[in-house]
Length: 299
Image (cartoon, rainbow, N blue to C red):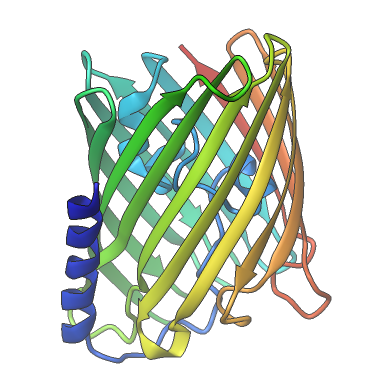
C-alpha cells in the first residue's frame, strides 16, 4: 500500500518540477465533483463505492464493482454556466473493468468546452486495485480554441470489518490527476493534483446503513492555484431505497477552489437511481446557487 502511494507522489513531484508556469483560463474550472452523490457529501469521492461516475473520481474503485454495468447522466447548474456529464462502466470478467465518459462544461458566453474520457481498472487480489484514465479535452471559446491530452493514475484498497455493526467495509483511495498538457502554445495549463481519501461503510442492520468519508488533496501546478483542499461527508441509507447526505468542502484558493457546505438526497427504485445535491456557498462565491441532479441505471 505504501509503495503505491509513494509512486503516485513521486510522479506528481517529477511532473510539477518540469511544468511551466502559464496562465489558467479566467473562468473557474475546479468543479468540486461530477455526480450529485459526491456533491451532496461535500465532494468526497476518492474512496466512495464504485459507480457510473467513478471514472471522474477514482477509477480504481470500479474494479470492486458488484454490478456488471452502470450508466449515469448528471447535470450541474449555476448562475453563470452549467455542466453535463454522461458516463458508465462495463465489467469484463472478474477484475477487469472498462469505462467511458463524455462531458460538456463552461457553456456560457460562447464557450463550448468538452472532454472525452476512457478508463481501465484492474483488480489485484481481494483488496487492491489500480486504474488509469486517458482524456482528450477540447476548449472552444468565443475568441480561441485549444485541445489537450491528459491522464490520471489511481489506486484503491478495501477490507471488510466485522467488529462494527453487522458488517463494515473500509476503503482507501488515491489519484494523480491531469498529467499532460495542451497542444501547441495555448495560454492554458492543466491543474496537476494529488488526492487521497478514506471511507467507512457500516451496516447496522438490513434497514440502516451509514457511510462516512474524508478526502484531502493538494494542487501542485500552476502556482496561481497551488493549495490544499479537503472534504468530509456522510450518507445515511434506509432500506437501500432512500439516502440522505451532508458534507463540507474546504478550499484554500477561494477563487479557484472555494469552500462550501452541501446537502443531498437520493432514491433508488429497482434499477433506477435519482440523486440531487445543493451547495451552501457564501454570497460572493461562484458556487453559490449551485445544484446537481443525476439519473442512473444499474444492470
